Length: 277
Image (cartoon, rainbow, N blue to C red; front, top):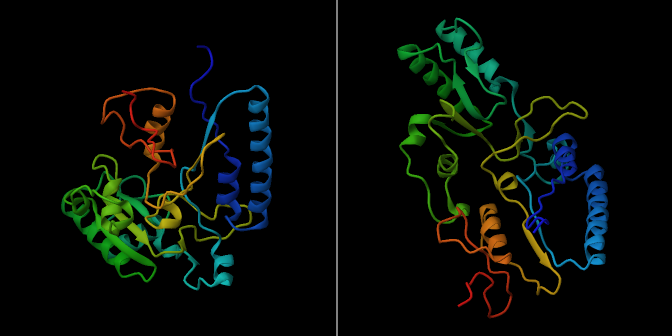
């Protein structure tokens, strides 16, 4: 028919506010209240039209509050990253130590003091090896750094299987590593270290993609009128949403068609993922 089977709506104000001023301040409290009000209006409009609908709420990443506030709330390790870990600062220090410079552009590329760091493509051979060696020494010995791995180390690591909550830091990095895209060196900051050195009013206080649970874990809620509520204690993944919705709307596909798995939304003995016989 003409109506969509699945409608995705980005409620992006929460993302902007969380990045800008943190996740636990008065700004986010106001946003959550307004979000509830707007969702209520949407659902009331659907109810008025007597539409049967299922709602899924989730997020693309978790959040970390401003370290200044976290330190007041029993997290003494919360801090902003040392400016010396910024790619430009690391590149300058490596040049000072080795004399190696890039013919054009910076010696190291990277957005923030964690994650992927790339050696300038013009630096090759022994010079590149020396730059990487110095980069490893500078980062691995820094008190704010939890772990550092080269692309070669990650490429040689088997892709992890099983429960993501049980993976090591190295396995978590390997799960999103792509040899043709990822950095020459990947840096993991300590838990609660915010990778934005300068606390500027209205500027970002959080980024994306750390290995820690506050960034990795997101809420995932399914709701439908008449559904019996329950909480799933075992870990699930956002890739499970698509096959679950496919089952709800009666789209039957072969096993393996999705990266995720169908989640049983029936709190009783039934299974919403079973195909009708």
